[in-house]
View 1: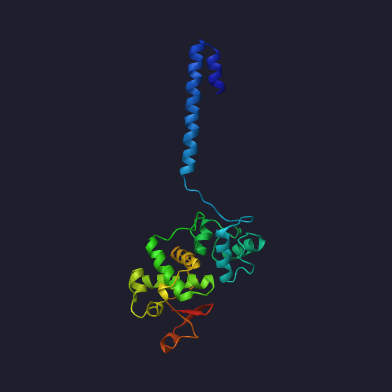
View 2: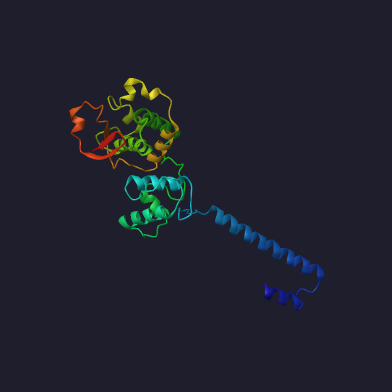
Length: 242
């Protein structure tokens, strides 16, 4: 810009009309460059993260997962304090990540949350799929802790990938004898809001069941076969097994 000013002052552009015209062109070009830069930045992917001092839904989900896995012992309050930072660092160290206590994209992916801070996706499933999965979760896990509701959703989705079950969500859910709520009318009951959230969390990759393809309530189960299945984890009143 200083060089252009010197050129102008030397008389290469020596009339007021041309002076004003050149500066107008220069200003217009400069504004266009700035506008292009702003839009380019806005259109590029932004990697958000949770760190010390953050708060909100993503932090609560991080705390919920780490609490379930034994890394975090504090309250699930959605506030990223020193206890959450320490828990994240421990999780990172255990999983071969840089233990900086910051939940960036790589850490969120390991935890089972979508990177970039978004928690509203559904892993490529349709809205009707979300609604169907939520109905089953609500009917099968009503009264269970939230992580247990997500785990039931995880079992259903695990079955889709397992060779012993149908390879579609509807196929798994409507497989004869698969879920008691289809026989006792429970699936037609009002769906809880938490079941919708649990369905989305499961579809986004969170699987507290640890890869289970079965679950049962030992206080109600009468099948000797289901009792013989290896237990992976226990959440609330349900045992999740392979």
